[in-house]
Image (cartoon, rainbow, N blue to C red; front, side, top):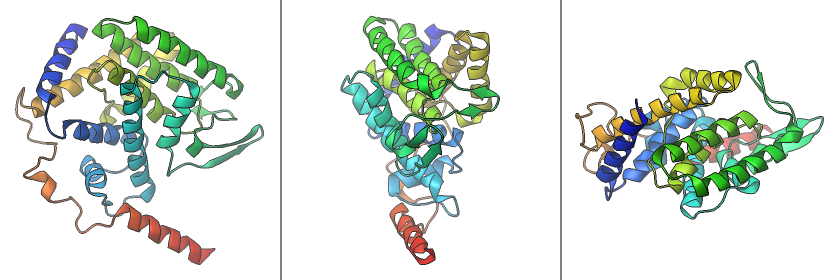
Amino acid sequence: MKIQEINKLADIYLKLSRGMIDHDKYTYYAITHHSTAIEGSTLTEKQSVNLLEYGQTAGKKPIQDHFMVLDYFTALKFTLDLAKGKKPLSASLIQSIASQVKTNTGETVNTISGTYYTAKGDFRTGTVRAGNRTFPDFRKVPAMVKQLCEQTNEEIKKVKTFEEKCNLAFKVHFHFVSIHPFGDGNGRTSRLLMNYIQAWFNLPLSIVFKQDRIKYVEALENARNKEDITTFYRFMYDQYGKFLKSEIEQLGGGKTVKENKRPNQTTDRKKPEDSPAKSVKDTKTKKTTSKKKTT
């Protein structure tokens, strides 16, 4: 899809969504679901909505998956508030975002070079691999993140067109996940930084669809191997156009969407999917109690 067409879709989307009750909230739910599903969450989209809307857990799904969803949603709102407040990027700001991503699923990692805690947004102190990819030496990470922040803050002041703004969002996404500064949560944080740039410029937010995970990983790897980011740009523009078309249909600007409809105030919200269901707080309490019995 051509960038000019995506720009038109973005304009239509913004016009249709303006003033619609709870529209932003359900967009955030969708972004949260897809981003966490890419990283292994087994919750369905409806189960994610039930959790975020009603605080209800989903059947026998792992509690860690619930916390991953809850943490990401909190991190997304936190990130968008930073963007709307025009907070410039810095290493400490990114670490605060990463700590939100891992609040309830963080772990202490011990390496020969030191210990770090992912729930605090600590930079890694060891080597990280993903498939055949080895990411930069951990000793280079602080300087690389600082440089990325400084370059991004400068470019934010200069970009003017829709294409330039989108390219900057996708570029930050690509370069951050290629640095891989944390022991875990790098993909989620990189997508949040993409949304941060988009929110800064009041653009519609992007989603990387969970069903396109393999293509997503391939686009990242191809761009790295060829040292040509345009490969990743093409993938992300396709995702952006796909998301905007879907949203416009749900907002009444296209064909009626019969499946995957968002809950509305008069029908879908009345009845959660898994009823009766336990709250996350109750589940966490029981988990804690169980631990006490075995220690």
